[in-house]
Amino acid sequence: MNKISYIDEEDISGKRVLLRADFDVALDAHNAIADDFRIKQRIPTLQHLLKNKNKIICVSKLGRPKERDPKLSLKIIVQRLRRYLPGIKIRLINDFLTEKPSVFANQQPDEILVLENIRYYPQEKQNDKAFAQKLAALADVYVNDAFAMCHRPEASVVGVPQFLPSYAGLQLKQEIKMITAVISTPKKPLVVIIGGAKISTKIAVISRLIEIADYVILGGGLANVFFRAERYLIGSSICEYEMVLKARQLLYLAEQQGTKIILPTDVLFGDPDNTEKRGVVVKIKDNKIPKGKMILDIGPETKALYGSIIAKAKTVIWNGPVGLFENPAYRQGTDFIYYAIAHNIDAISIVGGGDTLSAISNKQYLTNITHVSTGGGAMLEFIEKGALPGIEALKK
Ligand code: ADP
Ligand code: MG
Image (cartoon, rainbow, N blue to C red):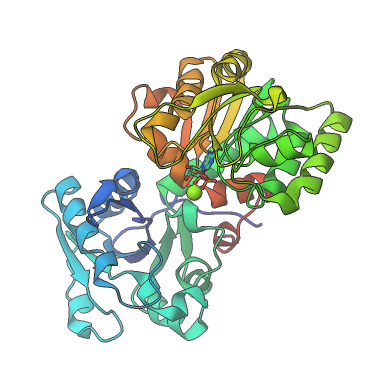
């Protein structure tokens, strides 16, 4: 049987555990932690393993270093973990390949070792077999609790589980169970909201969602491609012009499937760098966006339309901000989408994506969202294919 084993359904005790954690947090301009949601999400798995007297060695990446880069050291992660796990000794291992073997041999059950940023090693991304073997040699079992990494075939994700008994952690378990349940038998109407900058990164999942959803609501930079598909003027807005034909095909596919693709009817345009001045509201069909100006958020009529559709949904999936939310002048549309979902307490809701999560991280009513997924690319690929390399690697 091709089955995944979960850490809370098996007896894992007194073992050396290599935990592929996900501490890939957002950093601010001073390289401090901007949002530690991803650290907090790992605490239940860490506590579960600690309770059963396991010795944990954590593996994670932070950012995208090509080589050693002190700005992306996991030192700040170790400091934050100490705050959430009082009484536990937490120690950073600068280079596990050259560290004294006694450090690992003498590890205590109330001590966690955190390996330095695994992307410091080029072998990680190359999924180098010998490198995976060296990681595996540190432990008796492997646990993956890094859903957001599961679409990436890297050594610590798919390499190590070839050499050790392997399990899914509590956060990965929740991701698998929730997303699988929603996709296999969604309560209807199923409303999907897709925003973000680039349609090219989301086209495959949109095609798949058209097959299962009742409404596919679009917003953000990727909606501009659809405006061009319908020949509206978009000024100097971001747009992947090479995708316009593909957008027309999607509109056709949706019509065939009886799925409604909903586009903004009005937008705010302006300058992306101007945080003082509010954008100007225009109807898309009026073709009034001047050259040099960019569409940066959805307008009031669109909010009312999207809000009414989301209010009637029984299942909601949301990925991607519907505007340039980093500029406070253009974050209202994204905030509105968030509150529309959070206030529909009858619906099952899944929200995911790196930028989407940072847009909503400090909001009220977050517990009203059924499942906040830490995966952006991973969530979309899992919805699209129903499988991910990192999850398949755990199956026996
Ligand atoms: P996620 O990480 O949640 O999957 P994406 O990475 O796909 O989301 O997209 C997020 C980015 O899209 C944000 O940086 C946001 O500013 C940008 N964006 C959204 N709408 C627009 C727009 N109209 N013009 C330019 N950028 C936009
Ligand atoms: Mg993103």
